[in-house]
Length: 159
Image (tube, rainbow, N blue to C red; front, side, top):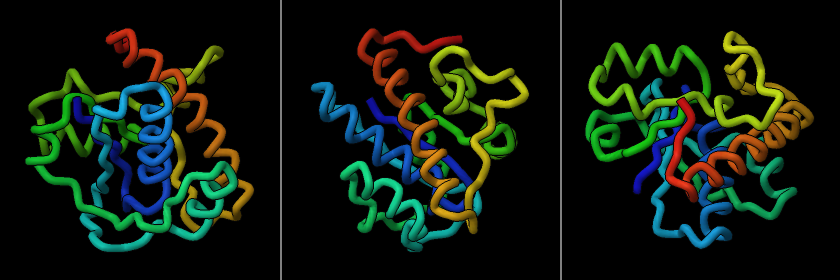
């Protein structure tokens, strides 16, 4: 299985989610699942932002080797599950790549109960925010990813 995590620049949210998801999958005996991340803005080669690196380093996950990647049609075609950070990303995916819509979800759709209202499922872009904001997002990401891993173990994705 291949999972693609999508955000705007691929320097904050999606690398944090991808790194934590890969970590959890490995610890859950699911290291065969491939996790990648990419951005809708087409930025390639940029490192993760310092705050994202620091927020994950605090939970012993190394993001220093990350380099941003631009979203591509080929990557979408080879991904069985696509996780977006906000509704704008889902709209961009639908406009640019209309095929494969059934396998696209917002990250916060996997948030443990009580879930946010449908109009509050976006994980806001923290670029330029202080480390405290990245820490809060890290904790949201952890909750969502932990539940996503449970879904994957049981091969059921919520509708």
